[in-house]
Structure formats: C-alpha cells, structure tokens
Length: 419
Ligand code: EPZ
Image (cartoon, rainbow, N blue to C red):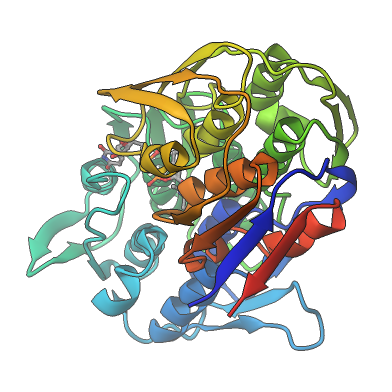
C-alpha cells in the first residue's frame, strides 16, 4: 500500500495544469452507452475510478479503453452492448457506477445495477434516481441488493427532486435523452458537471434546455450518435492546489480550469486573505499575507463545494482567528478532523458544524487517509506543518488526483511517494 511523505514548510510557487475532471469523465463515460457508434473522450484523467468505469462498461459488453496511441483519450463503443447488468463487485468499488442505470434503461428497456450502498461520508441513498426513472415510466424494484428497472419504452415525464442530487439529475437526463417526448426536471442540480453532460447529450442528438438552472427540459431522440468531446479541467483539483498555495503562503498559477466553476472557492479564499486574479482558464493566486478565520457553509452549486470542505478546513486550522465550517450535504464528512487534531489543529465538531480555532503551526505526524477529499485536506495541512507527515492509504487520493505528488513537487513542495 502506497503512502505519501511530506516535509512541510516550502512555499508553493509556479504554474501547474489540472487534469481532466473525474466527475465529468465518469458521467460522460456512462453517457457513451446511449449512443450508436463510437464516443471519443479527450483529456481523460488516468485515475482508478476511470479504470473501474472502463471495467464496468466492458462488463456490459461495450468496448471501452484508453487509446494506446493517445494517453488521455478513451474510446467507447456502445453499440455492442450484450448484458445490461452492472455487477456488485464493480459497483461497490465506485458509487458513480450507478450512472449506467439511466443509459441502460433508456437504451434497452432493462437494467440490473447493484444498489451502490453507502460510503465513508454518508448513507447516500439513490431514491431520487429511482423516483426520476419511475416518472419516465420505468418499473423499478430492489432485488437482492440489485436495482432492477424495466420498461417497454420510456416516456417523457415530470420529476421534482426532493433533494439536490448531481448524479440523480445526470441519471434522469440520460434516460430522458432516449425517452419519447419531453421530460422536465424540477429542482435539478446546477453543478458544472451537469452542464457539461447536457452539452454532450445535445451533441449526441438530444434536445436539452435549462442545464445550469434548477429546471431542465429534455426532449428525447430515437437514437443518439457517438461524439468526440474534450473533458473540462477538474475544478476540485484546482481548488485543492489553490488551498495548498494559501496554506504555504505561495504564489501559483493554476491552468486549465473554468474559474466560474470554482467561483465560491475563489471568493472564500479571497476572504481568507489571498489575492486572486483570473485570466481565461488560468487562476493566479498569491497569499503572502496573514490567513483570516472565516465562516464556510457548503451547499449545492453555486454554493461552496462540499468536495472542498476538508481542504479549506486545513487552511483555516492555521488562520489568525477562529472559523466555523458547516457541512450541509453529507452527514459524515468530518473524518479529516481527528487526523488534523493529531497534527495539532484545534477543532471541535458539533453535529454538522466544526469550530476551528487557528493555531500558529501544525506539527507533522503519521495520518490516515479515510476518503478522497479528507485525504486531500490532510495533504494540504502537511505542506505547512512543521516536520514530516506520512499520509497512509494513499489509494484514496489516487482515486481523484492524477500524480498529485508530482504536481506538488513541480511547485516546490518536498513530497515523495513510498511503496
Ligand atoms: C456527486 O455525488 C459527486 N460525485 C460527489 O463527489 C459530490 O460530493 C456530490 O455530487 C455533491 O456535489 C460524482 O459526481 C461521481 P448527490 P452524488 O446525489 O451525485 C443525497 C468526490 O469527492 N441524496 O448530489 O452522489 C445524498 O445522500 C465525490 O468527487 C439522496 O438523499 O451526490 C447527499 O446527502 C464525493 N437521495 C446529497 O443528496 C438520492 O437519490 C447530495 O448527493 C441522491 C442523493
């Protein structure tokens, strides 16, 4: 099992380019199942989660693989699908596999996908996904841990989500793209990953209006065509690198990201004291002044991203004052707190709220990664801690960040990976 060893203290300086968006990639790979012919995705990050999704697509009978002649390109042929069942042993490795449900029901009128079950950060039910498919006429039932959905042909319908769900919105959009007539999704998620999927589905031949708002209309098509699409830069990786620059009082430029997609993070880092300017797909951040304590409340886009909560908490743990961090999306997303406290952070958690009293310096320590973004938060903390920090179970980080230690080292950090 790999671990990452960081010696804190170096200021991060220089330019770094983010990899392709993990969460956009996973939805786009699922969408390829809707299309006849080949879908080509460029700018795909080489991540464990992408490998898992490739395995699932191939298990369904699609042919999906990285193009050996182009390192960041994935080619998927959805026209040879043979079995509409996504197996438990693959789905349990990655919840986003559940995104194949909508495409399979839309394309074949039947799907059997393992119910994803919870994960470290929460119960994560999929009731809204099922509510959406039922609104399109699918018969949905739970059978020994598998969700089975069947239909003689999806019909456009109206679904009003009870909670804001990114993958739920995406699943229903994909099914609706092959449903007969118009589907209206009320209380749709507005995340950039929803907008990017809508762009791809429209390119495939569906008619979509309102992506990015909380009301999305989809007029399905009888058949969708494969497309070529370049995946957008990973906005959470960008936010993570910017947080690392703030905690080390650095000066970096992050390239390849849509600044609008991380505007809440940029605003919050400005409140913390960073100077940030934006030009095209590049964010320039300079943080040589003091770090101020602030109030953070995570929320659905365009609010502050829950996927950035651990990283900003690491920054606030060495702020000049106190901060309050409230997590409103997931019920158990403070697992970085006990590990930050072992590094000397002064944080107390009461329900969904963490009270952070800034300390002058954190101390390096052996810490345990528990989930993807908690691990990213620990890395951010380690970069400014006194001495050496070893982050164990680094496979959590590798799920969402491509060679993060190389990116940090290229910015001047003292960090290495040990087998
Ligand atoms: C997506 O997960 C992302 N994953 C998550 O990123 C991200 O944290 C999350 O959106 C919120 O932004 C991918 O896109 C692969 P939700 P998703 O459905 O869609 C509840 C990362 O680190 N809910 O928006 O699964 C749910 O329990 C990952 O990259 C229901 O109650 O999240 C949660 O409390 C972590 N019923 C809230 O809604 C449902 O049917 C938001 O979940 C669906 C969700």
